[in-house]
Image (tube, rainbow, N blue to C red; front, side, top):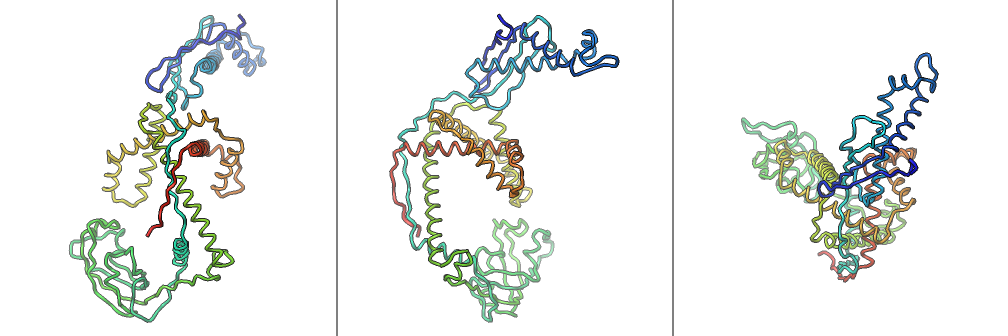
Amino acid sequence: MELSQAKVIVNVVEVEPCVMKLQLEMPAERADAIYRKVRKAVTSRVSLPGFRAGKMPPALIEKHFGARIIAEAMDEIVQTAYKEGLAETELPGRIVGSPSLESAPEKYEAGKPVKCEVRVEVNPKITIPEYKGLALTKEKHTVTDQEVEDRLNSFAEMGSSYQEAQKAAEENDMLELGYEATIPEGMEVSDKSSYLVKAENTWIALHEPEVLPGCVKALMGISAGEERDATIAFPEDFAASDELKGKSLQYHFKVKSVRAKQRPALDDEFAKRFGMPSIEEMRKVIRNVMEREENEKEQNSLAKQIIDKLLEGQDFPLPPTQLNNVIEHSIQNRNEQLKKRGLSDEELKAKLEDAEELQQLKDHVAKYLRQMIILDAIAKQENIGVSQEDLVSVANSFQREIGDGRANLNTVVKEKTSTGEFQAAIQNVRDSRTIAKIIELANITETEVPAKA
């Protein structure tokens, strides 16, 4: 048998669900051939004083560079054994993450086979749940004229301004004022909460949400130049300040001016602010946007129904390292979001250590990974994939997200690949197509959803 034909011997042992050990054996003749090849390559690259590269006696080569040759040779032997051995199994399409070397000889011995063990994690073999002919319900809503008008009015609200008015304050007016609370002896207010007990020149809007609880009612009817005393009672669940929770304080207000809300008229001039030629054209654009939103809601609802049906009763094992890595990443993201919410140290600690919330997060991750595995299996069965155009499109979207058109596309892809974002985006493209295919194959009952009152 030719040396190149001596096959690597492989035996697969299931260590635990989704964890396999590959027991590999590189035949002696092939291991020796790899060692000689590596020794020749190293010899051609190195030199010693008095000798030209490639002209050193074998004994000197072994003495000075033997450890290096063995290390490089063993590395190539193990990698070759893993690559060829893995190809002899049914595992390649199921591998998750990177392999890890469990055991290998400490040194190479001529004339002896090289045995090693490599641990790999794999996606489980699953029975694909029935996905053809699923019974789905599409809740369809037709956008009404009133809803278009409500959306248009919301734009007008955002475009409102406040003009000084010589009148008593009414609901939705804006007050320019100063205020100060009388702090009881022994009560301390931190810098974080100081704006709630004293402000010399600020603004308060007479509508919900209120900066100071009850201030709208307390200040209704006040005019510019007037002063007023009022009791402000902070509820027990007041989120803006722990120090003020459940406290009632006496406030003194001094109003400098009253500003009345001026809402723009819904006319062509208003539409031009948004780049529209007329108010009627703006209504058409708003309707189109709202119809797209409704269609997206319908598709999201169908997708959720599909996922729920596909995951029903599914409790197959998951690759442990992948599961733990995603859980850790999710916990890290959750903790960062909690810290940004401005919670007190005590509230933050309670949230971070909430065992029930942590378990919910772990369950959510496990559900997501099972969803990903099932959709991947369906995609393979339906021959759904991603194209080169898809890869370029995702890369371009990341480039636009960075906001610098000069950013090198390859650099962007490399960066997003290192964080896993590129792979996730590609996965989303494939999953979306798979769900679209399941919707195409489904039995859908359509029901009309009335407009919200």
